[in-house]
Image (tube, rainbow, N blue to C red; front, side):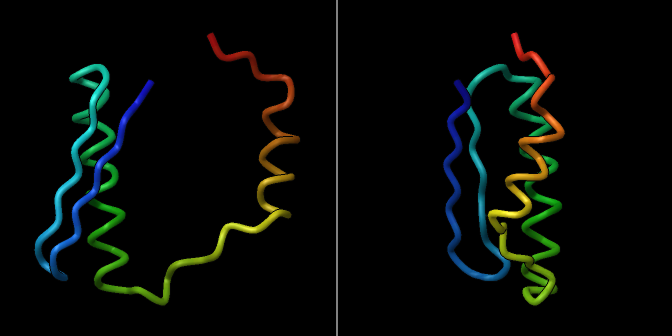
Length: 67
């Protein structure tokens, strides 16, 4: 199980802490930091996650097995 804790203090001060596998946490943390920086610079770039998107993803992943 992956645990995510995000602290947002101001537009230039935030942190993300992940706990599971150290290498996975580091990689995911870098990815999320990039996303957060983009959102801070361009807040209008956010797109709401819709039921339609969820349905499309579920269809795409229906045959995928996760171990």
